[in-house]
Amino acid sequence: MKRILTLGLAGLAVCAAAAGCGTGSTTRADAPATTTSTDRPAQALPGTPLPGTPLAGAPRPTTPTSSAPRTATPSQTSAAAPAPGSNSGSAPGSGCPATTDVLFTALKSGTGGMYSRSGNPAALRDPVCYAGFASAGTIVDENHQPSRVLFGYDAASRHWTPLTVGSAHYCEGFTPEDVAAHLPGCGG
Image 1: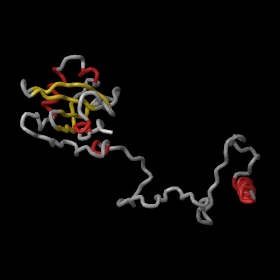
Image 2: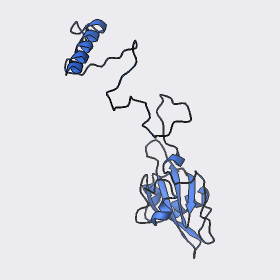
Image 3: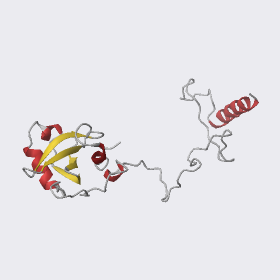
């Protein structure tokens, strides 16, 4: 209780000294005040790590960190996913490797409106092929959200067919779990 009271009083003192609380300030009275102090190191409550401090046993970053927001790259969307353009699982009759040109032709000529459902992409990118299934990212205009298209290979006709489109877990019901783990955005 003494610590809370001390922190509360310190907060009021900082507020009064720095911002002149109540003297024409535009800060709402019901908004929580935030203060920072550069003259002493940050302290955490016992058992609570400081922000930015890795938890015990957590891996340390190997590259410098920045304050810029990170965006996921295609290879980061699934830990088990091969790198973009990877065509592993190329057993005979699996259709692998699959190229963006072959998959894009299959998407445009496919039935069921899959081309329009995928945002009428200008092209495909980062194909990944595994065991008779392939996925590729869409390159779309600013009015559509990028997604991935799942394709299945028919060994008898030697033809790729678009099966579904999505951005996460879009392979459910189309591929076995062990195959989904190799395709970006499919595996859990």
